[in-house]
Image (cartoon, rainbow, N blue to C red; front, top):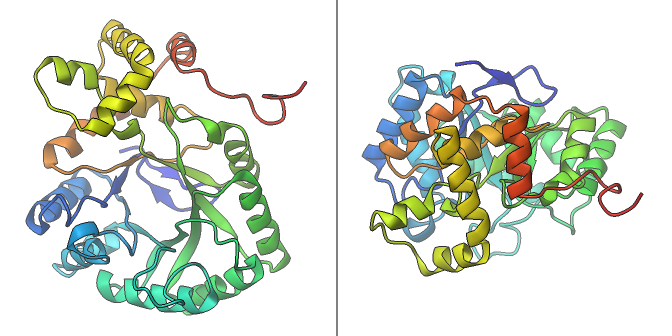
Length: 322
């Protein structure tokens, strides 16, 4: 495994991040354990979770599964770079959500308990909280760092100007600031190229793309439908919107002799500021099926063809002004 630095930090992570969102709702604890064990065996050391993950089996269930896995020992915790998130409400009580100093403290302690660890490597804001000033946010995060409960701070779903505001606020406090940003980014969804990626590059923030396969649209959906695989109504509706692009994409992947899912991941890994796309497997087959993407190096001609099929953005303001 060729490890990479997370943004400007000295932290070394695998170029694919194991997303755990399906652990609990769709993947049993036993199968989740097997996937995480296999990940470490293959060198994937970067795991991502969130306090709200668990869906129908209950918020917090996913972190609990990860914590139970850590509790087996065998240096599982020591070998894992653990990222988790806070923001969403764990209850209906008014201070059990968002990014107030109170909720940051409570949410961190609750995640540590579920995860059965005494520290979180990367503690991430799951969304921007427009009601909490960054001075309050950084005071709370810096306190957690001083207590040894977290090491790095990251964000998710921030706009470019949010990243700038967060970093300048941290700079005034002589704080490290954000080292990562999780963004919705794939060949079909490229709005972050306007301002988020340029801001991330300028501030040395590592971008961790979520939904790299656009909910399955970039994973060979037409091939699977031709083989009789079923698809949800939502998937079929999205396919109808983008059918021409998906047809051209899968045809090009055939010309490359590569699986569409692997090409989608390899394309992300070739983008500036991207550290590690998040893969969120439900099964061992899905997990292991993502790893060949690390062996694909797309040349300039292939990258240009993908940009023809899925037009992207120049940086702002060049995208909409001279």
